[in-house]
Figure 1: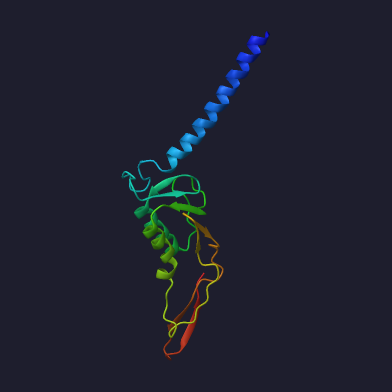
Figure 2: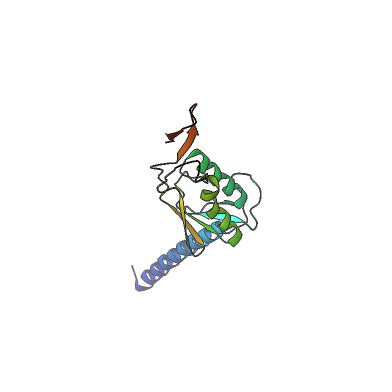
Length: 160
């Protein structure tokens, strides 16, 4: 093999590596905030898209409904395409961030006079710039609901 052939092979390898890295970065960027179809409602995702930690995306309205249902069913949210756990989401709109933050408070409010309850690690959402990190979703102790029996006394029920 001559000196020119080795230089040519080295240049080919460098060009191949550059193309591979550029293509991977471009595809990831394109997949992150592109105008694609939502995998849930099949409509075009225009403005309000949510990017999951697995780089799949969907429209905000579908994701909001999905997260509310996950809270209702006491399930850990998973990606609708690859079935990986959702630990991190990226939302660009501040109003939508607030909506996602308010879900735990909306679903788990009980009057303090009527019920005694405790909850540990109930879906806390932490804000890190534009990324919400959904951690501590393990529901060790759910809520203690108060129910009346026939003698009008409280019965404390433990829900798993």
